[in-house]
Length: 357
Ligand SMILES: [Zn+2]
Image (tube, rainbow, N blue to C red; front, side, top):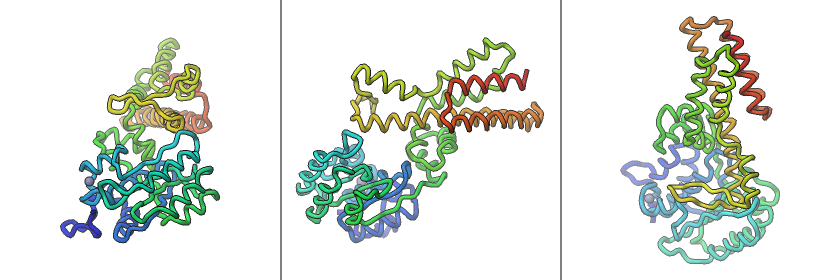
């Protein structure tokens, strides 16, 4: 069993490192580990890391070292293969009654290796149909079963479920916490810095950006845009084409193609191609759509940065810097309004050229 209080040698639970010492959050979890209740609800906006927090708490409960993050138990929890920790997934947009019944049967099995069984239920705000079934599970489960739910909000239909749980608030992380999180995953300083500047308060979006090879090559190309401006429209058209091709694939088009082929989207995880459930596909598409606009936004920022640097070296006039700034602002606001990216890139590149030639 994990220690009931943090090891005296450090005064901290090891799991706190998994959450990068977000003080409020780790303090809450620490408090509950000392006297473990039966059900918890992690609540916070998308990208705040509530699922990460639920997994860290599961590790703290089941790992013999209080959530070291690296032992067999912790690694098995992470990849969903630990016999005493179930991460409930769903196939549709909401958790179905059938899927909830699956939880009923798991909840009644005694833990195999530990004193506790942990059941993680992500995205409880999508339990519209299954909430009554789950409420019954929570009420009837033995004390050895611990439920860790997470949700972005508490819609009416999960109010009874939520009222059975101890609430743990997960605020959006601060910029430095997102940066530290990326570093802890072994991501390079410069990449982590760029990803954090694009998504300063969202763990999932910053991570998607930092791990996208498309994003990296796009940014270096955008950094060279000013050097490549010309009075030759053909050259500019080539540049526009290159800029467009570095944007991550448009997920909407891709989803359409896949639908037509009635194939399922696949992702490569550790070299293994996995078929995704329709819910996971929808999630992936949402994340990729955001990644596309994040990449474009970072590209615009990098053009502006190049011009500001040139301005400080006296290579362009302050007036030109101001004009570029205005063009970038216009493009950014078009992007926010979901403007057409191809049109946006072309308009920007040609307008920039007319400033310099
Ligand atoms: Zn461990």
